[in-house]
Length: 188
Image 1 (cartoon, rainbow, N blue to C red):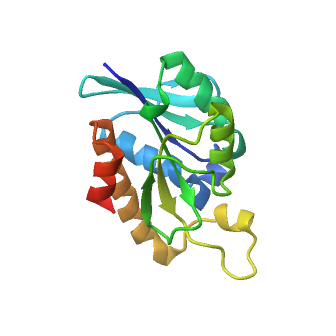
Image 2: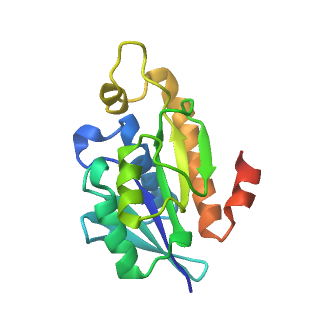
């Protein structure tokens, strides 16, 4: 039996629901709904549940540390459950991708994303799986912080809903043991 971990990044609190920066939480919520699960526990500054899938235990985590301190929830829970770096998947927003575009990666820098920066610093490695969800760049004159903390434009919402469903399918395949190269070939 393998223990894996899926982490959706976002900020806690109702005022952040539906914002671009919380797309990681939104994807995790859609996965929970699809699998008829709910968050059952709190530990190490995060809400989590255990998904028993194909003989594996998969920890699903939503840190409530706020985005910039996400690693402070991820590392302790990984250590507690004995999750290896090769069994971690992080879902987060990416401004360098078009709205709704999905991209899988096995490793890489934080790319300016403070939540990823925190995780990389805490883990001491950039080598772990991630699923990036495109939120597009800010409009001219908009500050980055205003862009990421704003909801999606009404016209973008149907595209994002489709992307969330596709992200759930990707996560289910990952959880079933499909390697990243196969996932990239299937979904890119």
